Image 1: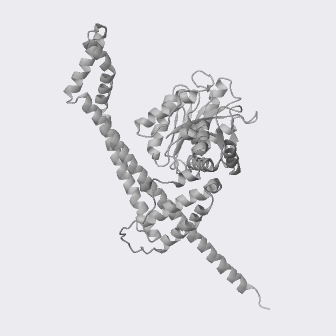
Image 2 (image 1 turned 90 degrees about the vertical axis):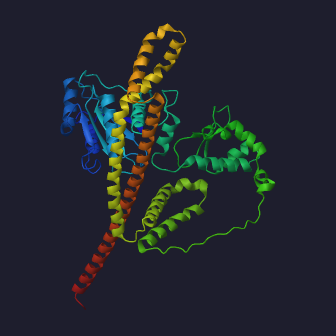
Image 3 (image 1 turned 180 degrees about the horizontal axis):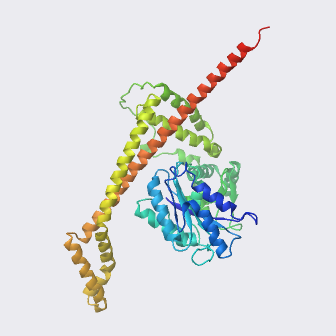
Length: 486
């Protein structure tokens, strides 16, 4: 999903009120983060003089104090988008949301695994002199809907906006809680709740067991609050149990405590009773590992000792889990490409760069083909909108004569091109599927390229460390030889 977020930039006192704004502008255009300056641009101002122009606008309208600007961040799912596509999305969003009133600088950062965009815009409109005002609910009413629409056009995933548009959806809250890691807490929480239900005799003992496991508990009884909520150690917010599923509401938990226990889990239907099953297994010889592969396998194995630790305490090992995931990716990469040397890793990285270019060309071809068919798609969409009125006209409702004429005109245009509405819809679906396939290719190639880069950096740092150690030893020997012998 692509999710947007907006922050304000305050002033820094009377001496240099725009200091924070200047620092933020400098930060988002750092060359090593923006593809050596390739992924940055601006609207209504010059990128090289953006701060000076924003400052002049404030001086012109006498609004140099208080909030200096706003900082928007649009984050994409890891591996779903490349920097070029993200830059197009961010640019279109900036022009649509701010283009007529505010000076803005925007950039895409591709130096992290999660590609994301930054937009910084002036707090004062250069056209009207009015200050930008963010109203409660604007994120759900204006900002995220534009982001979702643009992402849909590019075949990217979106997030659901809650019906109460003044409040962010659960997806947004979950993204905020867990955007810095992949670990899925819901499974852990459900497993711990199930274990407590299975062992508890009463609702009170269930709460006591959860508390002993390190969970914070809120609204345990209806007199305290409406919904039972718990918080595992390591998280900052409580989570309503009902959000885990219908089996985890307070009423359902009380029912399950009455009906579920250890004996119910031990009883199996007759057809599922344990027995000896004979089968033939074809055994393969274990493949021999090269030096590089052994190194990564050993590191992965050592990190894998985490599985012996209690599951409910996994929050303590979040960094180790991430490290284990990366090591597993790197080890499987070496095996998948049968790489045995650093030169082999470099060769695979180079081939991934070529594949990336091929995939980019293929994507451009599909987008161009779809763009040529867009007029037909627009005709088909309008025909579908008029279909109900056309049906009414055919049933004798002369009120819709104007719409009937428009419908007949559009249908004739479409037939001249040799298509029906159904065929046009099928074609639209075809391009959607093709774009999804090429994006999957892009993600896979980009991931392989990132892994190869990580391994190369790791090997390079290891070689550098050995070289430095060798130099130190040699220097120590030289110093020892220079000392006079007594």
